[in-house]
Length: 159
Image (cartoon, rainbow, N blue to C red; front, side, top):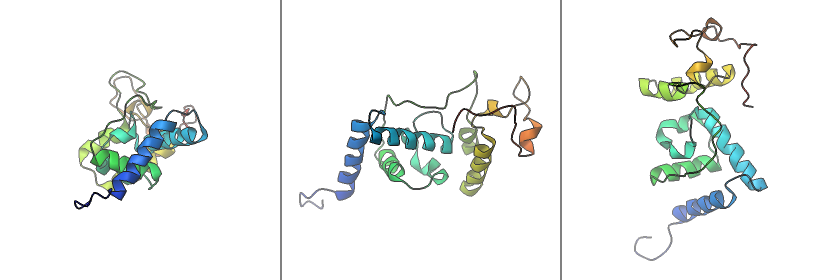
């Protein structure tokens, strides 16, 4: 640090977190289970199909509360690192299906509006376009979702 040969404390802390993530990564321990649960929650909260740690922090972080994992995510994003081989829980249900939040991010909607819309999708238990579509060609949202009501005939398996 500053040419003195001292470690960068922030980098050392984040590297330590990365080591813990790698060491306990897959749920083989109590800490591994907690990490997996935290990453699954982040994936659901942001509505992205892959491991959230591989997404741009600046683009998605406003959808999350700060946590140990979000600080690690910020570091991973800033350093342009990628993590491979992690289990994800959100899957496309149909060919050409898209995730709602991923689509909305491309429309220039403000961060506060996105956060509000995200809360709506979480309440409605809808993460993909196919979750809210009423017809086979994907051009019409089911009226129940337009009104903001839950569909009692369809429940998400995500808790």
